[in-house]
Amino acid sequence: VTKAGYLFMFDVATATMLVRTKVSQDTIFISTYSAKTGGLIFVNRKGAVTSIAVNEPAIVGYVMNNLVQVPNRQDIAFTLARRFGLPGADELFQRQFATFFASGDYKNAAMVAAQCKSGLLRTPQIMDQFKQASATPGQSAPVLTYFSTLLEHGGKLNPQEAVELVRPVVQQGKRELIEKWLKEDKLECTEELGDIVKPL
Image (cartoon, rainbow, N blue to C red):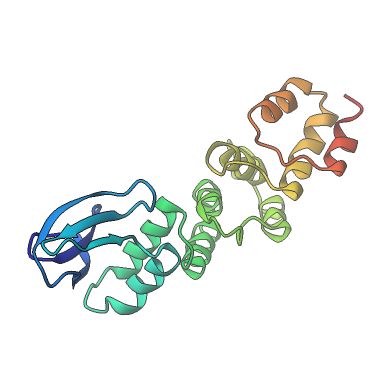
């Protein structure tokens, strides 16, 4: 927020201005970060206190649809959604995933799936795609790449993913791996998962 009452918002990675708007007709006296909203609070010369925060569910759509003058707006929107886990870029995530998967870049396809916070790319159908994909010589199986990437970057595995990952690990008798994942809270615990690990 400027002293003259203008709010500017930039994408730091590209230095692209996303928003410029007048938020106060009077001079801004003081402003500060708001821990409560993640935005900012300011007081103008007349003593009016105002709080401003980014509308997270709408920012990605706003960048894609309203900033027509910005040539790389889709890249900016996708990067914002990926970096901050924002909704509104599912179509971009799907396209990026399909491009990587079709080219055999399973690591980056799995990374896109891990970064898509809506869960759209974390379904049984996506797991089946990785299972059915053929491995390139000298590389691990695509489904293992998928799970290792999710464990490293995607947080907790959903119930279907946890069951799919744990089944072969139980067959190999690798109890310490399952214990490690449980301690790190990487597996969504379900009754089905409990039945699978019971023999260990």
